[in-house]
Length: 263
Image 1 (cartoon, rainbow, N blue to C red):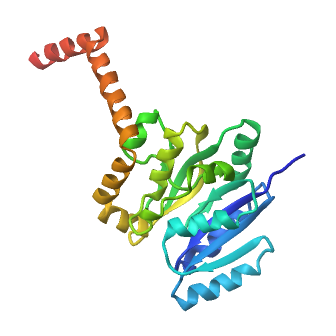
Image 2: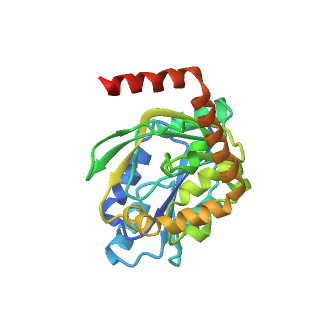
Image 3: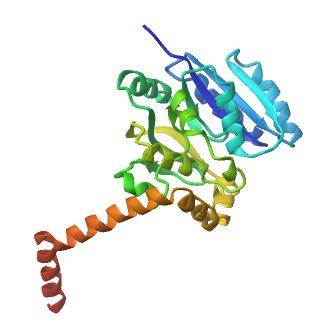
């Protein structure tokens, strides 16, 4: 039975405290035909660099590449460049896969023919609970980013759409911008609401700090870059809302609300 090689790309910068747990979550997958590509994005902590060297000997499928510090977009793009697999999965260096994530991703992409795949998540660290990552409609993608960057994609599709935007290296939410391109370019996807990975919540994480600090700048850049699609999708939402307001159900509901307010 054909089992395609899957490349797991992990950008790394001074997170030696968590990386072993992250790597073990990949090594313990039910699907075993994979390689792990860690891009050391110019780590400065001596302890983190030492831990990387220790990790390298855990398994022959682990490959580590160094680059000067540029940011997560460049690190992940470099990781895909080094990837030998036909399917690429992205995993942050403080998060963890649940045991069947690669298996279900390969099945969706290879057997069901979709271009990319993602699942739900379970929080750990400073937060608990689950999140079913669901994209209700294509228009929703411009409202916020309902999908975390832990997803799987055909390498050919990733390269076709141009990878992560290096302009967002120091800003954040690069996964949101890339997923906008996947949606607007009509790349097929499948998602399941069941948790497929563990998302570590840290108050001092890059995503928690940089994305909040630069959120207005990020959104301005993304909306300008995708202005045509944004106008089209926003117009669709407005039109659907206007149709709803003209519907019989909406008018009945409005009358009932007035009656109830008078009681």
